[in-house]
Length: 50
Image (cartoon, rainbow, N blue to C red; front, top):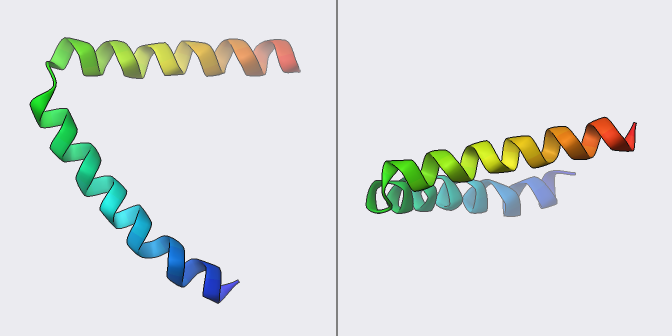
């Protein structure tokens, strides 16, 4: 499992920084709408999936 973790750690860190970089450049209402939309979709999916 450690070899996979070594590969995933830099990817997670870069993804986090990229997310912050994008979130600062996109209007707040768009980020909020995206987050709420993903949350509603996942809630509906898992509610219906059982």
